[in-house]
Length: 180
Image (cartoon, rainbow, N blue to C red; front, top):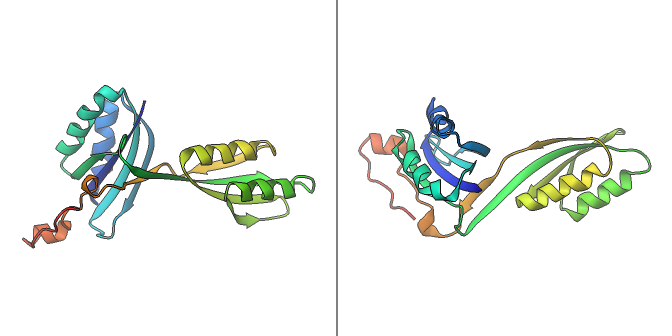
């Protein structure tokens, strides 16, 4: 079953390798992984969707919290959280199907990010189910190319999302920021 984990980590070389190493060493498959800097350039937020038995969730969280570069780990699997994914889809268009492609793109709230005589580049962002339905709809027009971002998630309950002190401030002995 897919489990969603959010990590706040130090933005340092090797952090991603250590995290994925723990997961792969235990034979846990990563279904989705996204990483980006936070407002504090010394920290990154990771959203990892891992395919494991729900019974192992607690073990995963303990393992993540033990890692040197992990500042905080949150299990968002059953939390009130917003989850989104983006897909960029290249679909070939003909004179006969151009209007249908654009109609379906509009139905799913997709944006045209590129248009040529040969086809369209479309961007669809939303819940995973919506993105998958959009991709399936585009397949009806023929061969498509798809690139997906992976899931990003944020807890909606303030107690679920903690802010760590800035890494550089903590190193300088600065006062820590309170968690949310």
